[in-house]
Length: 154
Image 1 (cartoon, helix red, strand yellow):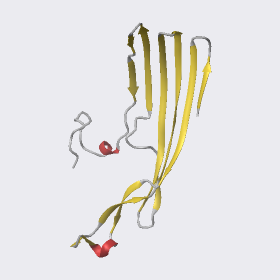
Image 2 (cartoon, helix red, strand yellow; image 1 turned 180 degrees about the vertical axis):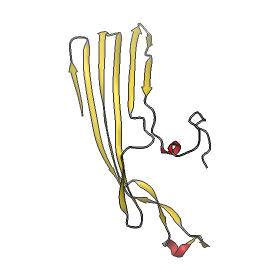
Image 3 (cartoon, one colour; image 1 turned 90 degrees about the vertical axis):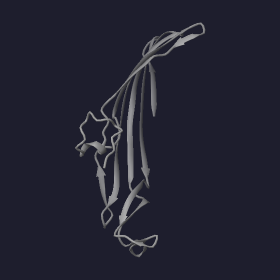
Image 4 (cartoon, one colour; image 1 turned 90 degrees about the horizontal axis):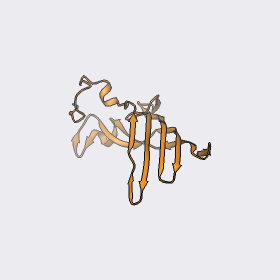
């Protein structure tokens, strides 16, 4: 849903928000009693397979202020928040587990920029700041934070 309000002849304020529900997420499931304990004829103790389970809720919104002082000169500033929860099944009884925060997500973003046009020439620089990304892959690791993201995790 989105709303836009003209504050005066130069300024406008836009507010948008969303909430989405997703179901049947693809997740990995470890089973021990599938295919009589064999995979392609080889005896195995566990088998991990993909299955549809779980739910996810995504929500967020943006507030943007636009300043248009001529048809050829505009500026804007915007703040965006995005987050959600993930619910997956685990264990032998398919119990549900809800994560309080979504992984691999930078929840806050601040953007600003301007547009300038003169005859056939235009320039539109943008500046964007993203908050720190939440990533489970590095939370419980002994890899120092200043290491490259190309580091192989074993």
